[in-house]
Image (tube, rainbow, N blue to C red):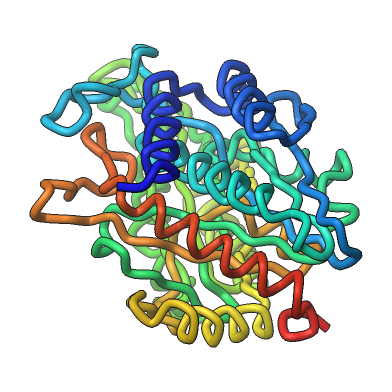
Length: 398
């Protein structure tokens, strides 16, 4: 193992020991600032708990941003044979999605690129972004505060536990889905179960809604274009009383931003029809509903030209990598999507699953971990893309 690999692994483990949730990454912020300072890169705070820095080459040229997310999840980490030396010391919080690895990879790439800055045209912006896991997310705040104003293109990555170690996946166009939260409250008329004729039961209304909504949506959209799920249903207090209100929380994801409008319209129409169907003569104020659909992250679209250039580059420079350049789009969502709505960008995934090392848990598991050899692969990819982009920007962007 090389010194740079040891260095990256040690940073990743230190970040893993002290995870912090979305919008509270204060100690993580300080750690990143210290590491950057130690390798000779000045940085500043952005988006409250984020960090931004620039490596300036000695020659004129474009600017490429490398982005890493910083936040952890509210998960109690379970001890395993792998994590004994670096298990979370912040009770109830865990880097269960690989963001510690993402930060270590970008820091590793930054160290190598800074060492060769005299040969680099243009500049490299390092973006350590808070709150990817918690909508509205940190990307929008980075953008609002001018973090990408002088950036020509941006690159991001994600480590995945359900992909074989070292495998690299991406595709041009839609790569990750939009994420949208559904908050629904249905109001009926409560009363005793012995007098159902005098009640309007929101349970029956919600049952009709949930049992038919997929059929209604699929009259307009192919089932391959979306997923919809319910995460929580809550209502009522008394076993023998019809409740007045029932609350439903769920989400839906699509691969086309326009499908969000269609699904929202179908949901509203279905609910309107149900209110009419369950109305009782003489009762004017119920049934009724409140619907709030929160559009969290849009579809993540990789820039076609950039993605094609990366594939040709990696194929030639790193033939040892197993690359899937037309990967199936993922129903996962990412606020990296906001960056690529503003500037050309490229997002890819790297697999860390290694049965021989018992690295088999998926992201967000309380036993999630990575094969740390994946870190140097990520560093090599970012370094290769960055150098080629800065020298040949016309191959990547218009």
